[in-house]
Length: 198
Image 1 (cartoon, helix red, strand yellow):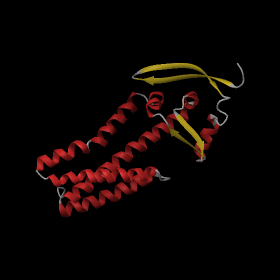
Image 2 (image 1 turned 45 degrees about the horizontal axis):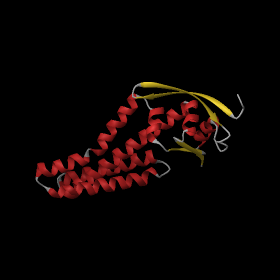
Image 3 (image 1 turned 180 degrees about the horizontal axis):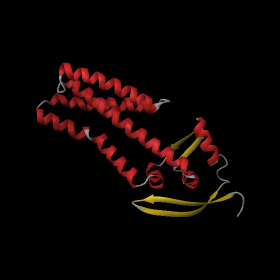
């Protein structure tokens, strides 16, 4: 085999069935390619980062059925406010509770800012505890069905579950990528991930 080609044996999981691929990766097209050993060391030293470009293909390659099920549960928890807010408005005949959607919007905005920080998990814990304490005080003195308090409760809920699902996804993705050298090269070859130096 020519030295610029590398044989890779890939095993993936799609819908409960194993996928086995044998392929040759052309290393001449990937002159900027970071080798797996350098990626693992660089990731530990925080000098290398990766970005998932195609989440669907990444999930097929790196996530098993339990993790796919967990992601679906988190997705349901993330979209639950869009079902519950109108329900509570109708049940309590208080249409001011629709302001909960504003809380969801701001919760997503805070989540977007937090994901760009250098320590998203620690920030998530600190912000969630601060928000929950403030929410508890507001509920105690004003009650949950006040429009401002309800909107703030939606903000806290939206921020927490968006951040939680994002952090879990990233952590599982990182761990699975660090454990599987053949899939690392396959994901780069198929443009599923992008690896770069920081």
